[in-house]
Length: 105
Image 1 (cartoon, helix red, strand yellow):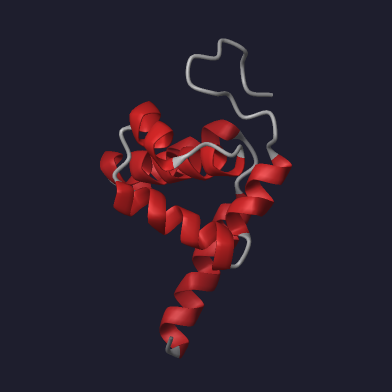
Image 2: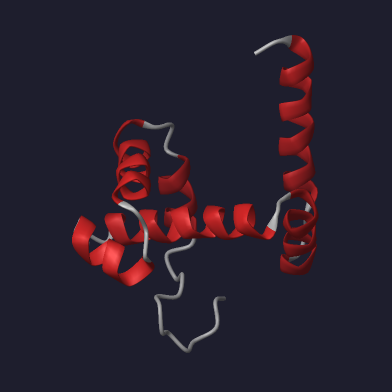
């Protein structure tokens, strides 16, 4: 990554860290991502949650509609990545499951 791209990435990370509320976060991602990109990010996180819960590929595909390529990619990140999914999932162990009616705290 060159210096400019590195600075852009740091600015992006700083922007995310500056968000203080759920509403600010949603508005930022709705502006910076297409609806599809925003949904894809949320979709990958749900796949990671299900994999971490010990669900198998076929079950995850059935529950989420995720392709085997997406599930495999997320699984590789969980096994060999930088630990980002694990950090988020550990900090948010009360994420709602599909069909849950309780609000996310």
